[in-house]
Image 1 (spheres, rainbow, N blue to C red):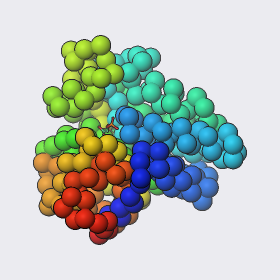
Image 2 (cartoon, rainbow, N blue to C red):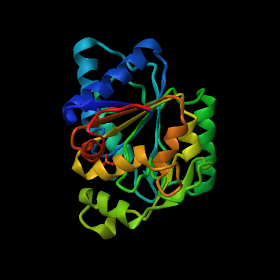
Image 3 (cartoon, rainbow, N blue to C red):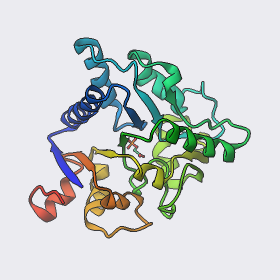
Image 4 (tube, rainbow, N blue to C red):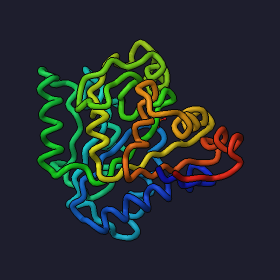
Length: 251
Ligand code: PGA
């Protein structure tokens, strides 16, 4: 895993956007794996800025999102379908037929998982997967204990995840209990992975990501076995690592 230190959230987002733009410039029909949540918001703003000011085109790019809540209408303001429209897709020249998210409203969710996985394969696999990290170490919605062999599947959200995401809902009770998520093996098959972490609340998990052995209890630790992972973290997120190491390192 290669670690890039950013001064702050903005610098992290700019570095991340640069890597995504480089991917798109090198391969105009790249398959991007996309994430939602607070960490990646500014990265998307930077992509939009580059599209508008530097004419970077996403017309041939294909995208697959990591996850979607089960049972929430696509039109619901907190669905990840809505998030992606609002924060990225509506502002760039991507074709909506090239954007894929799991359908959390599917009648047959098992079948939905299989066809989502098949669609990723059909498009040639993911070139670059963008990830955040949960305070419990989840990637996508792969909560602690999820098999490293998992493909796209339905998962019950941990209480801590619901609590973290309840900031977008009126109450904790409104947060969906389940989600469809790409599996850990799906994520690991991406050719390149870019994980972002920002803020003091990510300092403990980032420290564990670098220092713990690979363990099911911290799903993100599996990334240590991937040959092409870049982690970009800001100073707050790196604070626990720095306390112990006093320095930057990559491994
Ligand atoms: P966040 O979510 O970016 O909102 O912190 C990340 C995640 O839970 O994967």
